[in-house]
Length: 334
Ligand code: MLT
Image 1 (cartoon, rainbow, N blue to C red):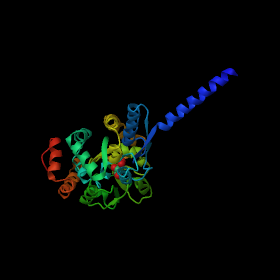
Image 2 (cartoon, rainbow, N blue to C red; image 1 turned 180 degrees about the vertical axis):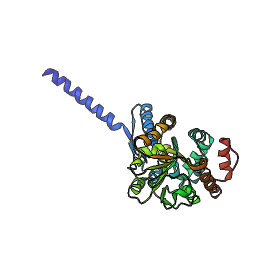
Image 3 (cartoon, protein in one colour; image 1 turned 90 degrees about the vertical axis):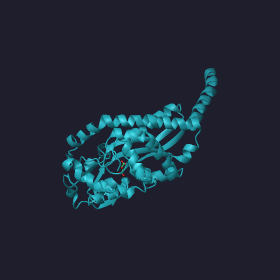
Image 4 (cartoon, rainbow, N blue to C red; image 1 turned 45 degrees about the vertical axis):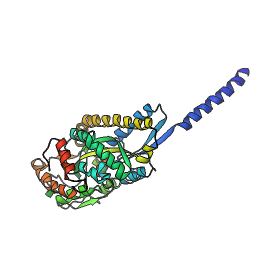
């Protein structure tokens, strides 16, 4: 009995300490547009791990994949207004709020992961991050590299733009992408990402475009049969934090966010290099999709889509911005 009397107060105070440590732990929310299993989720999960480790377990990041917290464009707004801590979304869904990032979604500019890394992790990426803080109220602290956007549809194999005749193709609510489809003489249907699977399933639209990893993560193979091995835009998917939230952090904590973001970015790049071909194979062999090569090395697609570049010089901040990107990539000016 005597033992119990001594042990009980100690047990109670230990329980109180544990409880207060728990209540002190902070939780941040991260919205993720894609379902778990793709490059967005890999980036988010790695960020959460690195951040927890670097804050000695004081901050947990809870992930909400598959558009649970709203469409990608909504989550950007929410982060900007301080109603959400973090969001991972495709860059094409940032462009309407911060038009200069459109230079990275002009058709046939970025052609592979190495080019994407060179741009996002160099001076171009720094400048676009500053512009996005100014224009959209969010700071880019990490990048997911998801691969080229490939056209999928449920109707027939497509190798030339004419093969799309009669089909309705979902596109993001992004002027550059809408104009690209119009250049191919296709009537695009601009639609939020969070509504796309259902629209494909119900036949409201016949096709869409996104990278192999995204087609797989979103289980589009359940509602799409044909893939065109196109590469009209390289899909970049930034991790953003509301700028108000970022500025409310101590300098040390700001540095920790950026370090965790860089570690997650490095992981995302390695993940794409390791997994893209594996996933492409799985889409064919396990999920029965058919991949068609674009006719004549995609030349007709490229020639038509590239005609839209001048229309967007003003919104990206001038032709010089595109020429600078092309120079970094070792190409001739536009
Ligand atoms: C879109 O098509 O709206 C996005 O690129 C999809 C995504 O975030 O993966």
